[in-house]
Length: 196
Image 1 (cartoon, rainbow, N blue to C red):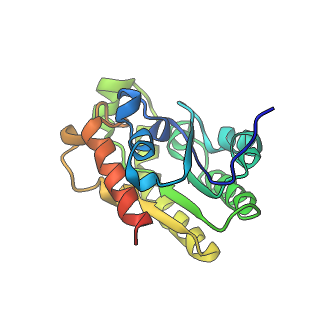
Image 2 (image 1 turned 180 degrees about the vertical axis):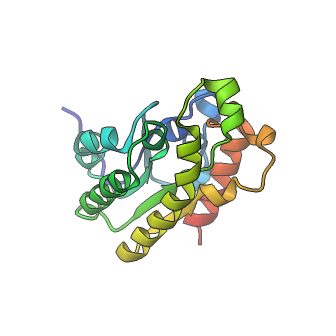
Image 3 (image 1 turned 45 degrees about the vertical axis):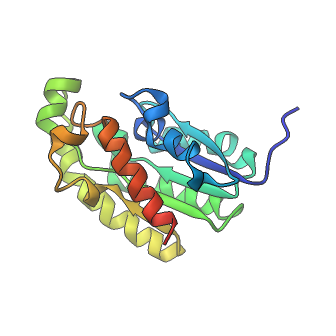
């Protein structure tokens, strides 16, 4: 039988939370885990490569709520848009996860997914007809997620704006996923936000 600690900090998301493209210990969540900033928290990374917000919602009870978390981080939506799914579906899924989170804790953080670089993604990740759709709707997803966070009085981290004015070669490996510099950027922004 697993004894669940009450100081669990669960991160749920897709490859951007999992840390696709870098060594595990270089991903931003793992770097946070090994930092002094994590304090007494038991960091649990439930990022899964390729997950949509529907996937995340389907596993939310088992992968998040069952850990009786003290803190929860949620970020998703990029894969939904890359799958040509409607914005309202993403928002509904994230809002349901927020509502379920708030039954356990008031400490919920929403990650606003970063931008993509479609020309690099097409060349370096894989060809796709949905990069235009994703690029078009990511800023609108950002705007609507911020509104939801205000409604529920929860924290958000704007990785979208963070990645707008930085040379893509400095932080991306393929236009979607991030190199070590990108993960350091994520970690620093995460730490700035939680330490406010």
